Image 1 (cartoon, rainbow, N blue to C red):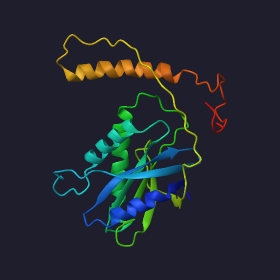
Image 2: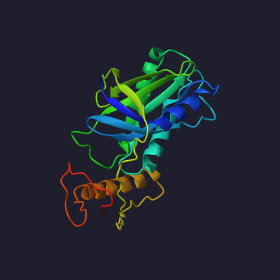
Image 3: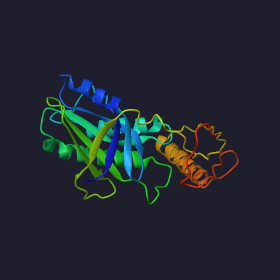
Image 4: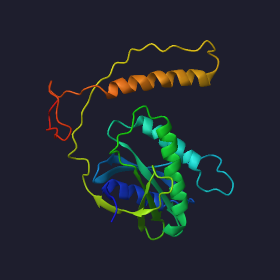
Length: 230
């Protein structure tokens, strides 16, 4: 058995409601938190329908990728887009190619805007879930998005109540005061965007090398954060 996905009960309810819709294929994102041993899925969100769907292509991977990019920007620290789901009337095996294209397209777009450097032990498996609209049967697979030749691997999908009820939440404020040199040609949006991203990337690297203190003390990387600690 491959990776395990512990899924909040509310996600099952959300997917069931989407199955009741009479539309064609329904796609969306699975959000949660990764860990070396297993992933925790706490929310499923449908990709908004596009006004004009490309002819002959019921699943628009560019549109789903853009949805993932915008959602990734809004998520708080510790949560990320773990993968995608698709709801159809067809068999799961008929959607594997589409699901693979979606997870790789999302990874390509989201990682292109990432300011932080990836760690060696970062989880690179993305979940791809198919739900049959008629039978409500789920079919879960993962793809290693760091391997262009990756094939579908089986995964365990289990619903559980109160997945994130015991999580600790850390709140912090970050004040940014930085000067960004801009090009002489300020009418070119591409040059402006490039300058801003370069400066932000340098700032992010300095922030990444900083030290986080809890009650004035540096905790070990594997230390647990007791409830109520600031």
